[in-house]
Image (cartoon, rainbow, N blue to C red; front, side, top):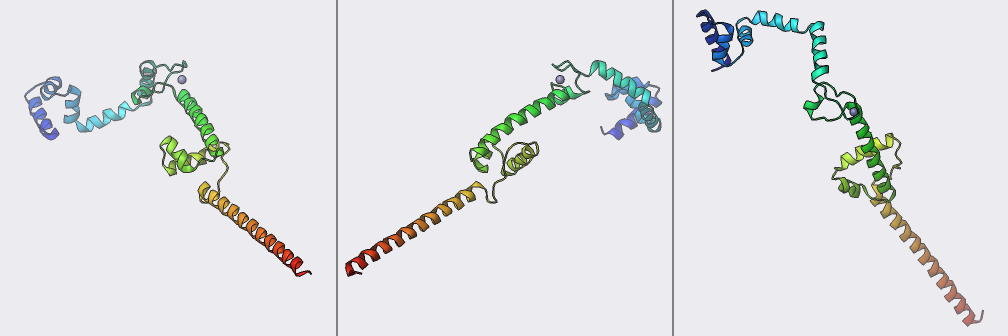
Length: 194
Ligand SMILES: [Zn+2]
């Protein structure tokens, strides 16, 4: 039966003299629900009356007494927080988050200082590159020592360093070549008796 069919049936049952409660019982709803079906305009007024400051205050008082479990710290949890699966008050959750961030931050600072690449750190936590970048940004804002790396990251820096070393090696080789040549020349000159 659709809602409209139920309403039509309720109307007929009421005309036969059944009470709202009796009609509701036959349709599997409460008597109040039947009243709302049959008097939609009145139902709107009832709902509006339900939202008065007095009612809200009563509701709040009831919730304070019945719907706010204690946190281990002694504070009461927020209304309905336990239904969201929380078992600590908001302050305790914040403190736990801050603690976790601090521990994680120190780990990342250590890995960063040890020269681990983004890719290696991501893999450690099972994060995406974007998530790690975001975490680095947030940790820096909180004062964690995570110096910016050059564009291209450590890999490029390593490559540049290797290139630089190679260049230096080449320079050294060139110098050695020069010395060899000078030496050879000197020896040659000696032999020529100059
Ligand atoms: Zn707490």
